[in-house]
Image 1: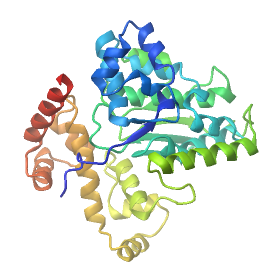
Image 2: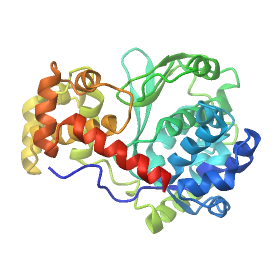
Image 3: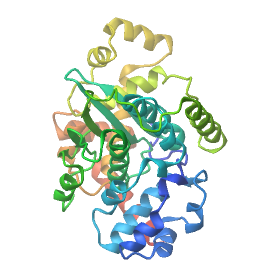
Image 4: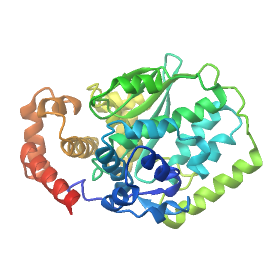
Length: 357
């Protein structure tokens, strides 16, 4: 099985860095030095429609947090980041007819703003919606600050119409609980859950029929067309008219069901509202194997978690749906040719070396 850490370069539009120079400077950081260490230059932040390397963008906030000794720098950057600062995708949300339309458009169009990223709006049975966000490039392991700032950005889209006092029911994060986690509750005024299978906002559907203050159908189509055209030039995102492929749908559901140990063929078929035999038949039509897809998702998720110094082998095994650490170790050795511990040591050593260069 090929190493999922070897993947094409991921990108994000420079609008995602709007105001970052002033913000880092206000926190006592030398933005020129921090950008340089991250593999960027401050000149790249000038034009919102330019492309930034996503790995470097994520590293920018890690480096800034380290230099300023502000462990929650990404969290607070996201809290002050207003929707219009996101550029085209921000205006697509702002120009939508209703709040629900804004959230749905944000979820469906974010892949044009930032490639190799999963965003999805899921409707739950209890009157809640879950707006999911996760970078899918397993080579990007330094992603905590990006997740926290993005959840803040998404919250501010809803606050634009629902009011400054609007709060979600809960905020979910992939990463494990950091120090000063009390600040997260202060920032979101909501239940905060760490170590989840994806980053997400949970919020009630009630009230989302409210009109967006700047709704404009004509301008919305212009912004939509501009974003798609731009993405075709340099982000490689898929067209809006193209629905996620069967493989993309299944791997997304597997990723969501891993920690809940609900990732059998029957579990995924239920999530997709179809009989198991129908899903099996559709897989056969595309020459896909459910077992192979499950292993691919587990391997990519294992590499992502092993790329972080925090979680131990038992926690990772449980997050991947294994009942025993030894079963996870055997599977990972089959996938990579290395034990999980050896792979982690090599990867963290390489990451540390690159960070010093």
